[in-house]
Amino acid sequence: MTVHRNAVAVIPEDVPFATASILGCAVTTGLGAVFRSARVQPGSTVAVIGTGGVGMMAIQGARIAGASKVIAIDVVPAKLAAALRFGATDVVDARDGDPVAHVRDLTAAGVDFSFEAVGRAATAAQAFSMLAPAGVATVIGMIPDATPIEIRGSELFLQEKKLQGSFMGSNQFKVDIPRYVDLYRQGRLMLDEMISEQLDLTDINKGFDILKAGAAARVVVAMGRTR
Image 1 (tube, one colour):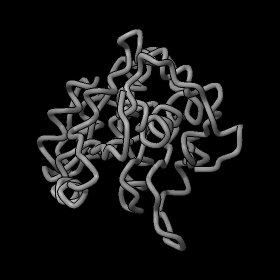
Image 2 (cartoon, rainbow, N blue to C red):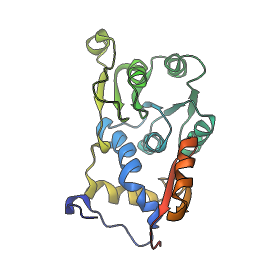
Image 3 (cartoon, rainbow, N blue to C red):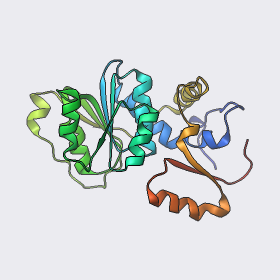
């Protein structure tokens, strides 16, 4: 692959290729949304809608940033259980009533930061609604083009809530990737645990089947030599 030198970072020899392979997408997007786009502060409260690969990294980012409460929201029980292992303090099954109401029950006034990692207008609106006054909602999911998001205008100016987007975690590759590798090597960032399965290229169709089932975080396909 030919890429610009600004998009290349050196990975230490002791980091396995499979682990390094997820740094360029899910890790960068989820962590960057927390660290760079939203700038989550220690002691703050956080909600993450969607606990796939990107959402799970946002959960880890919130934990590493020192959030006092991290609420994971999803419709898949297995993913909610995994979210608790990666740093969520509470989980909300979105099939069980209004997730916004559940978040408010857990926090009283709402959360300081919310992250939408599904890519739907409805969940983006929920991320905004579950904010406390002056809170920041960050949309990470890829909402289809020309799809409007409905929010209450009064919450923008009377409560000073903010709705923003984050593309690839507002990343700066040459700075961020080495930082994430250091967090991994320190044992603070769980990357190996994010890989649900490693497959040979001949089993790539199995990989797609695993993804369609919806329970996997990340599936890595080995296309050549591995460390």
